[in-house]
Image (cartoon, rainbow, N blue to C red; front, side, top):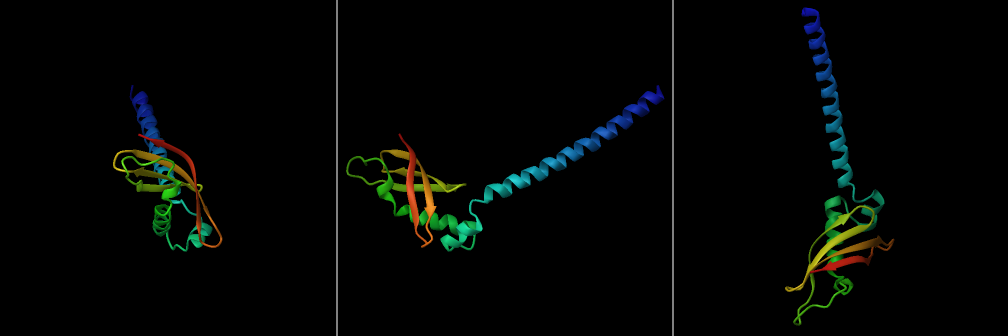
Amino acid sequence: VSTTIDKLEETNENLKETNKDYENSLIELRKSINDFQEAYFSEADLYLLGAQSTEEAKKILWQSLQTQEDKIPAHPLLGGRFYFSKGAPIKNKWYVAEVEDGHIRGVLLYQFHLNPNGTIAWKVIDSHFD
């Protein structure tokens, strides 16, 4: 009986070690995923935007998008005007933005291109309005 208990205790200790290894691997994987999520912009993107950081690049894109009201594929109601209420870059030159005019709300997917002269070209890929 004591031999069986010793074997079970040894197996239990081995399983605890294996579990700890898996836990550490999972923690490292989560860290790498979080790092990947922050990598919206390559060094070349930051250079073309004239930005020193990801946060600054996000602000530059947001400011540029604010000037693109003509790229909102809907007509406002009751003489209103659509405006961008919020947005966020997505990897690989994509940007999702919410718009509204006080009556209608929409979500738009844009593709953006960073031109060598520092300008940003925007193209509507998809939209949905409520």
